[in-house]
Length: 87
Image (tube, rainbow, N blue to C red):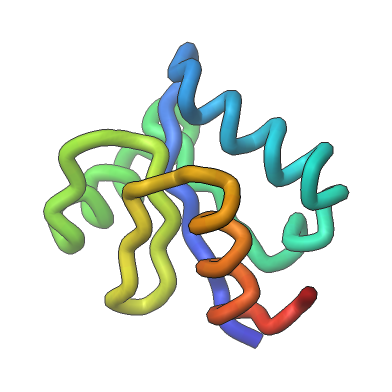
């Protein structure tokens, strides 16, 4: 099973929207597959990933070298299905 990372910040409206989409629209189907890396809760890992993947804004979903910054629902679902395999 592959791990997906989500970079997020507190008080980020788009981060909250993505979390709500994952929780309600996708019914937490990917909850165990996504590790949320919060800027304040895990600053060291957050900064390392921002530098590694050249991240300019959050939220983003990351799987290995595939980074999804366009977080429309259809793209999020396709990204997760591609890398996790659940439908």
